[in-house]
Every structure is written in C-alpha cells, then in structure tokens.
Length: 174
Length: 130
Image (cartoon, rainbow over all chains, first blue to last red; front, top):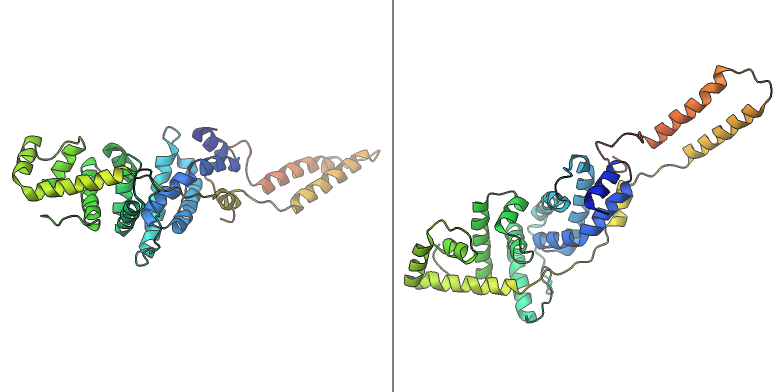
C-alpha cells in the first residue's frame, strides 16, 4: 500500500492503515533518532512518540508531499526535546551505536569514529550522519532541517571540524 | 578559507572564488594540513554505514491509535433489536408511533457508540483516551 493510500484510509477511519507507515519507516526513524540521541533505547521512545504526533497531525498532511520528510520534523523535535533532558547523561558503553561494522574497515576505526560521533552535540551528529551516512545533498539537508543552504555549509563545516578534532586531528586557525 | 576549501571539494559554490582558495592553500601549510586532515576524516566516514536498530513499535502504537469499544453497548443494541422483532410478531398491535421510533433510536445509539460519522472524512485524529 502506498503512503498516500494508507493516509487516506486512516483518515477515513481505518486506523490500522497507520501501521503500514509505522512498519515501513520505523527502522529508518530509529536509526536517525539514534544518531541524534546516541542511544537506541531513547531513540525508540522518541520514534514512538513522533509516530503518535504524526497520527494526531495526519489530517493536516499535504498528500502531495512525501511522508517521511514531514514525519522527520516531528521526530527531530521529539529527539531534541529528549536530548535536552539527557544532555548530562552521556552514554558510555563501548559497542558502536551509530555505525555498523563495515567491510574493509577495521573495527577499531569504526569504534573510534562511533565514539567521536557520540561526543558531538545532537545537532552536529544529526547533520554529519544525514550527509555522510544517508548521502543527503546540501539542498536536501536544507529542506530536511529547515535551514538555508548557506547555513548547511557552515553547520556542516563546524560539525566536521569538531569531529576531526575529536578523532585527534591537528589544531588550527579559527 | 577552510570552509571555502570544503565547499570546492564538495562541488558547492564557495564564498571565496576558487582560484583564490587554491592559491591560498598552495601558500599556507596550516590550511593545507587542516584540509588534508578533514579529507581523511571524510574518507573514513564515507566507508561507514548506519547501524540498523531493529524495532517493532506498531503493537504499542496500535494500542494508542485504535479505539477500544466496550462490549456492553453492542449487547444492549442486540437485545433491543431482538425485543423489537418479537414485538413486531405480536398480532393486532396498536402502538403506532411508539414502535416506529425504535429503529431511529437504534440508529442514533449506533452513532453515539461509534462516535463518528462513517460518511465523513475525519479532520482530526485523536488517540485513545484523549
């Protein structure tokens, strides 16, 4: 069932049609929420609440748009709200959270990068992972994060520089 | 300057013209090293993928979005229907309007129980318990 059909059916009263959207996007959403929160358990809570937000707001959804980018706005609101509460409680477990084991990459490198990512702020982690793990273009990032393209460039630059510094890169001029 | 170098590397339009950026990088060892370190970090990121996190959220969400109806109103309506049909079987009845209003009451009761007009598209969805 297409997203738009599921939404139409849901609005007509078939609330189980909403399950189509949840099942289709929950894994992707948990991945994105984990990248922001640095913690899969919190991420699942945030995703669940975001889906309930989306359900409440479904009547306002523009059927000409794609569902996930619209939903993502609610998801990141939920994540950042939760991140503010959790800000002083960083995760310290040693297994990777954001990154998967990749072929041809040593586990040490993946763990080091994962830990560095988790030391970034949620905002930095979000933009870096959307750009480099999901491959979003600058234009897509601007739309997804609702910021101007120029801001994408500067935010990405500073986020990457902080990541590079966390990985032990050289100090440099401002 | 480094932001401009990054923009060039990613095929974006830099705030500083490209030739000026390249000229600066040729002359400034610090910026060149920083750009190289950044390229190394980005190359490392490019080899990575997102870790999948299995989730089965639908059962919990379904409990909140799917309305649960108590059984007793349906039982009451069923009893009312049976009683109505029995009354209809009584010969020589003369209850006129009183008996004719019962189907309307049943219809009204159904709408009250379902709490929604099946012919109208919902303009706002509420969670169970809201």
